[in-house]
Amino acid sequence: MSPSSSPRMHRSLLAGAVLLLAPLGCVTSTQEGAARDEAALRTDAPPRVKPKWGLVIHGGAGVISRENLSPEREAAMRAVLTQALQAGHAVLAKGGKSLDAVTAAIHVLEDSPYFNAGKGAVFNHDGVNELDAAVMDGKTRAAGAVAGVRHIQNPIDLARLVMEKSPHVMMVGDGAEAFAQSQGMPLVDAKYFYTEERWQGLQRALEQEKAKAAPPATPGQPPSTPDQQQPATPGTPAAPPATPGTPAASHPVPGQPPVTPGTQAVPPVTPGKQAAPPATPGTPAVTPGTPAAPPATPGKQAAPPAAPGTPAAPPATPGTQAAPPAKPGTQAAAPLTPGVDPITGDHKFGTVGAVALDQDGNLAAGTSTGGMTNKRFGRVGDAPIIGAGTYADERCAVSATGHGEFFIRYTVARDICARVEYQDLPLPEAANFVIHDVLVKAGGEGGVIAMDRQGHVAMPFNSSGMYRGYIGEDGTPTVAIFQQP
Ligand code: ASP
Image: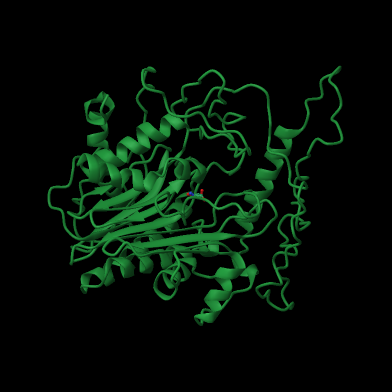
């Protein structure tokens, strides 16, 4: 069945586009303003009628509910999103390049502790912040990306330097940081990235991981064998030993000299000492609002999308995850414990991203992230991978957020733009099909922001919320978080 003939696609057509009718004035200062924004960015709003230049941003997708977001926190996050939109708009309004607007907006989000990028980056399993970012110029298809950097305050700037000042597209780790220094970009002490909230998030994830990996205390069960890998003890990540709330060796202690490249404060990870991924027999049913993604277990693939001839999955209900079709002999894409994502622990992704269309009709995209809480040392997500979490060409630009392993396997950003290019699909239709059909069937949670060269906007997500915003020519920032106003 072609995407456009599927009943779901008709729904998605409506669901993907946004109508941007917010009147002039501050949209985040009052409850009324926030409600109006939510209404304006509803994913089932009708398509825009007057495509123009503009900027779209995201601050991550995930299980975000009004119950777990305090009014103060929500207001603060909306304020930062608004500031990011205004920073990008300032560039575009004076005829600046979409690339500059994208980096200006991402800069603001990276500098905020509320989003999982730059300052607010999450911790990996070893209690270290490893950051990824990418930027792409749709006009030239020039691209730059960095992965696994630990001392770069604004990774999006380094991605741009890689794009503009090196012959390469992607640089990683120490090499990327050495390149930064060669370009006059200062390195920051790793403790810059420490936030108590993210540290506690890691401790929760480690606790959950341990609880799931612990053998059930059932009489008669055989004891664990010595080769069985054990998870890290909660509160004591493999490296460094950490007391909750106290940054350990990876976070240079005040008074100590800053970490320099090549002299990481983090002890090397000993092969074979990694905590075992949780492995619980059985595949519990997917609970609404629960990420359907399995843990990134080496050697085990997520269930592929339905093969031709297999019955289509039920339509994706906003805010719920459709269970992927279980095929004999394949591991179902389901979390091991309903309600808890074994990797993120806190049910939320928080990558930031921006896409923009400038007055010359050129598109650009950028994404920056701390990755996923409790990710293993050296893990790289989709954000810095061109075509997976970030992509722009002359007709389409995409930045993604979600469970990166799925976005990589399904080359989500490029898939959306390829559908626009090869199938001549309207952007919202292409974006919605990939997020609500392809990814949902695969069990991948997340969303994207996307723009085409006419200025059409799509912001589909298959999680319960996604921090997002739009600003057009009139300079009115419009911010939304939830599915429903
Ligand atoms: N996509 C990111 C990653 O997998 C996570 C996120 O969106 O927050 O690294």
